[in-house]
Length: 195
Image 1: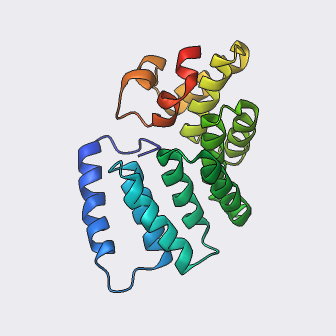
Image 2: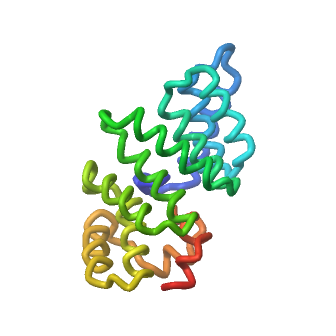
């Protein structure tokens, strides 16, 4: 959903809901299953409360599951507890630092910092994400918007060009207006009034 790797959104959501139903009815759901259920409830069903329930259950089942912290960060970000979202993302980043998944936790920390209007911190985390995964679309989008909003136009253009290589149909208009475009945190932020 975040990477927009599937052209058919409705089909992807339907398939995800099928797997979510199977995972939710398992006799003994694992910490990883709960973390992924949480992410899907938040990102695909827009249900941050049920997402938070599964995220904290994932953490209870395994306090060292970085994905549980990712799920907590997503749920708390949507519920508006930005401090909890940032803390969870940073903790997950420490747990996942040596893995190929580290960019996702930097993305989440950036989202929480951006929502808190801590733009320098957000840029730091997004740059870390892009350093580890140069084609990762979400931090590229967010860097473009942050640099554009803070009038760093040369940097904004640099990231717009990089993003267009990964996502040729990208446009600022679409980011601002398309509810299915994965940029809800940006749309909800004060950045929109700055660009």
